[in-house]
Length: 175
Image (tube, rainbow, N blue to C red; front, side, top):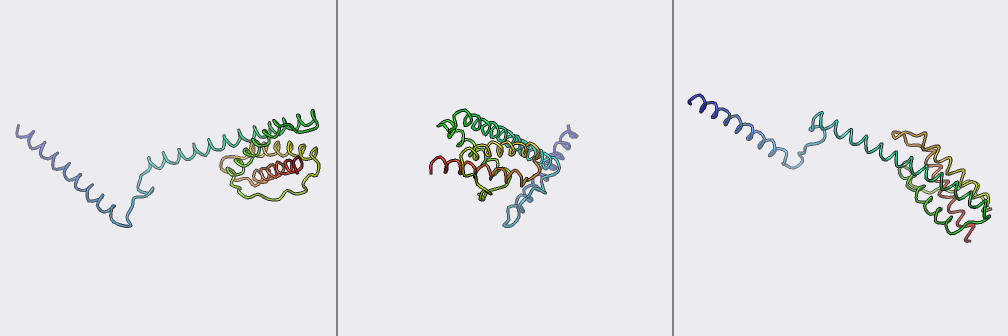
């Protein structure tokens, strides 16, 4: 019984010492200017955070690839509809709206933000629609080639061209 009491008392003192040391460490960390950063977390925590960041980057890249595929599909559909009807319909303008949103999201994800002027803007609707389909296809191919770890100037440039072509088509159709 005496041995059990001594063992219990020893464990109690050890736990009290650990608790006191933790209280002192917390008190030091709470003083102004002191904080625990990522460096204090330890290897397992850093690894978990790194894996989460990689997973987020992979998901973001996959979304960009999906958007670029959809943009290419819409660009092709608009061209096909234009060839059949020799005009753009209300549905085509809805597709242009969707294409505009996709191009802006792709450009933003790729790191671009500013509109730039279109080089050699088409003056005819026929030329603008053909170039729109080509630009959406080139954008898709550029995104497909780009990894999640790369900021691609080509992706940003193709996005900008697509955005400007959409504006140009709207201007030609509704001056």
